Image 1 (cartoon, rainbow, N blue to C red):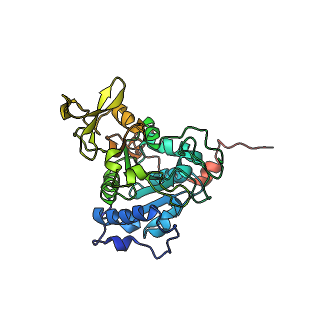
Image 2: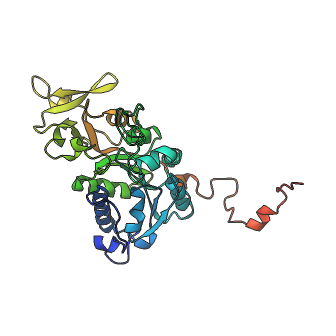
Image 3: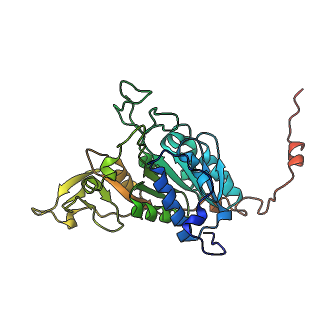
Length: 337
């Protein structure tokens, strides 16, 4: 982690650009927590880069007083990967959305995680295309009525967490935009992780898909619908902490504590498991049939892409940069008549 020459406050990471999100958008909360985390970890503005694609979330780099790159639709992970390969000293963040990252950009997203590129990916999920005025996205739910599905969506959605786990991502987490404390903790852990960190953030779009995550955002009811993950602790939830999760065959089931069932019968969360099986089972749980998880599902160590491709691993221990003109006009070039 790059350490600044002097301590900076969250305000020092705010740019002078006018924020052009809709008033009340969940993106404001994520931006606020990000500035706090950058100050807490001592991030240097001159060696921190935010890379984005297209969408409401993609405005993020304009609002942070660091370096930023605004790429084309879905290509932010590819740009970030190239940047981290050539400048491993930089702290590189990718800001994407459920449309940008899981539609045209899904291949780049998958391969960045597969390679364990040392970048941090925040996927803002509002289950809708917000910037282009309310079409369905890859995470929109079956039956959802949008401007492009007036009779209801007939497709099954992509699950961002299972997608990341299937790519063997080394850090996978979910946060909720209005839960400031847990959001900040997860962003900090992602920043400190060595390798690809993927964080899905439930983000309310109150213009085109208001209330999509009320069960996880409303403090009056969220305890009955959300399991807060804590490493080494039993999977307990409910306002009265009277329900939990235990393994049943190849899946999980909800049980009520009491009548002979205790916390010892419940599954304990282990984010350090080499096998992604537990994380995958937790990611599969979806409201309303099951409670949904919030927190860190997986945090394991794997060699990063830069470590695997370090100089000295190949036949030439010091190939150097070479000369572009020699390469273009060398003996291996083709002449087309």
